[in-house]
Image (tube, rainbow, N blue to C red; front, side, top):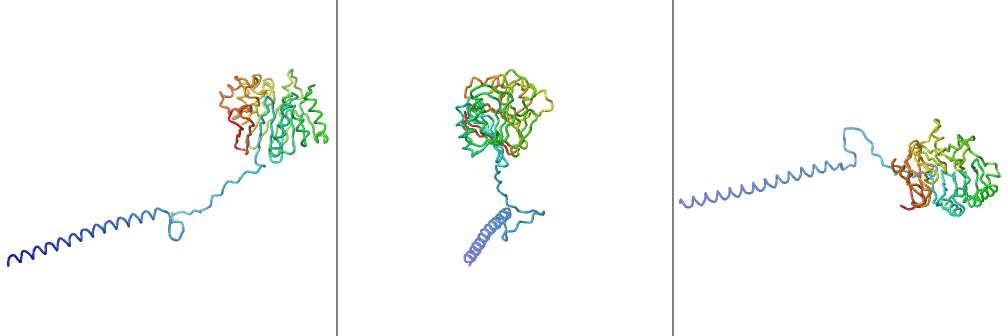
Length: 333
């Protein structure tokens, strides 16, 4: 009788143990289920998505808009200045919309190169042709261009130079539409004209100027496009720079400076650089040219002016949208 009672008690205890084990396992699964449910709910809420694709209520009004890709600027919105590699000489092409200006054309042996470069840029006529001064390394290549495409206006230096190169230039000029239509002028300081949306101001020479060195009669131009400016010095030397600095009414500041006289020590003085305060300088000269002085390069470097040399960098193109400048070089040099 006693043994039977003990067996019943053991059976009851085993049943209770089994029930407690079941309850414990169920409780664990229940707790895990609740935790998983909470995690899933939290992650779904943070995803910012809902079933009806409407924005969640953030407590304030807003509008969802698509971001448009930036529109490409049209040619009318750009001024492109091309410094053509013509060795120890100058040849600069400006394009603003449908309008073009060619400042000098290098030496006679560079004429074909300049013409081919213009055609490669889609240029079929020249709105303004500028012969800054009558030296061969600036006007020698212009006849090749003048004979092959229309020239609508021509700007000449105030002095004559009896050389083969300059006389060839004058003969070629006679057969241009600029000469036929009476659009050949000698500009002086203060003259202003427009190249499309760019404003061009003549800074030098003045009618009363008198210099021993003919390069000082170079036509100096300041071109403004929007908030950007370019200063083209031709071969003007320190004497001209001093005159410009003495004129309190002149604005000399420019983002880009075409360094005078191919980087020679006779130009680009410290005071002039400080007044112009360019971010970029371009020297048109052969690589290692004897004209380009280390002293001038040091002045530019000391002022943290980014300097490009056509002999090192090849053709250099600087573009402006009226606010920002872009620089493209043919080679790193």
